[in-house]
Every structure is written in C-alpha cells, then in structure tokens.
Length: 330
Image (cartoon, rainbow, N blue to C red):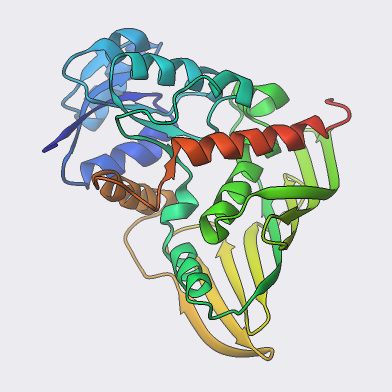
C-alpha cells in the first residue's frame, strides 16, 4: 500500500502525540478527524492548518471509503465498539491501550483478522527498551532470575474516564498494562502465578492517588516485583532492573520523559560495564518519537515489534486477573 489515509478518532492525546508523528512519517496522511464536539474540531483544524475532513460521528467516518486506516485515540470505553466497526468496514486499525475494558468485550474479535490491527504499547518502540531486549536475546545477562520495576508519576489529566476504576482509568488499566506488555515483549513470557497483590486508592484534595504493589511469577520462572505509585510521591521516574546470572541491567526513565531523559546501565559484578543514554533530539515528548517508530513498523508486511491483536488480547486477559484481586473499589 502506497499511502495510509488516516481517520483519527479523539483529539486530546491524538493531537499531542499521534498528529505530529503522522506529519513526520512518509506514507501516512491525516484525511479526517473525529470529535463529538464538531466546533472544537473545526477550530483545531483551522489553528493547525489541517488538510482534512471533520466528522462528529465516528461510525460515519469509519465507513468513509477514502479512509483505509482508523486511528482510535478516544477514551477506552469506546475502543471495542470502534474496533469492531472498523473490522466490519475492512479497515486497518491502530488503537491506543488498553485493548477493551475487559476480556469479555474483545473475546469475539477474530485473532486472524486479515488487515493490520495493532495496539499502541509505545515501550515496544522505545530505543533503550529495544537495546535491553537485544541483550536478553543474545544471552548477555545469562539466565534471568528476577525483575524489579518501580514507577512513580503524577497525573494532571482529569478526564472523567481517568478518574474511574472501570472506565480504563485505573492504575491497572492505564499504567500497569504497559508493564505486563513490555515484559511479554522482552521475554516472550506470560503470567503464571500471582504471589502477592496490594492495591490502594485514596481521594486527596486535588486528585485521586493510587498505589499498586505486586509480586508474580512468569512462565519462565522469573520472579517480577512491581511497585507503582500515582500522585503519592513528588519524584517521578520509571525504573526497570533485570537481574541475570552473569549481569544486571538498570533501565531508567526520568521526568519529564523527553528523548534525552533516560539511561541504560549494564553492571558486571556490581561495576558499571557500560552506559547508554538517550540521544538529543528536538522533541519534547518521547512518546512522539516512539509513535513515529510505531508508524514505520506499521508499514512493514508483518511487524515483530508492535503489539498485535493476539498479544493485546492476552494482556487484557491478564489485566482482568489482577483487577479481580481488588477487594474493594472506593
């Protein structure tokens, strides 16, 4: 296919991250944008000088013959219905995570859909994550025994769906989903057994705080410890420590998470053997850089990097297992 004509549904994250990436990637054209507030969409179109059609009905846009790729960046409550409608109209599909609000919503979607259908778990296209993957594949760390993940962040997004547990905005669906997905990407291994799980939620003066702590075993007998805090701590970071018999690697992402705010450190007998840092680029948001790589991968006949429908379904199934362990939703 020479060109993907994109119909973009959702103008918040879609305009911040997807649109600038589309502009910079050959083979993609933004042909339509869709927002239920058509006046807002028209104002945005004029402000950004977009050469595209404006829709307020997503189903009408999906049915448009000129659109061959539907990019779903709307709240998660609508993901499964837009995916199913796009499949009925035989479109290529990009969908933001999570893939449906629960496995029940997406279990009837055919895993062998003939068109491209990928879910944007952006860590799969992040540069240092791929360096870490290569080192694991090449057995530079030896047998991996343990992985420790710590993630502190402050959310300023007060969209209604972000504030509710069962609309895709919980720390499990919105953040922990990345962890499960990049673990599968790094190790090709899925959840086997949950040893410990704790979830806390608290309403503070200005926002909701959530805390998740869990310890689980992957099918390759790798123990994973995860601690995620949302709006609890002032310091923001994302640390992934992979401990092997030969070496260990620490992957750090630092706030404000631009392409330069990261490093990968290789330890050998507790001495630093090598360090790789992010390259300086004129991009203020690393997610834009990741989505540009996503689009480049999307053009391939088949991508081993992107999260296909089968892997996304498995991630959704595992997320549901963790959500069932939440004893009380406040």
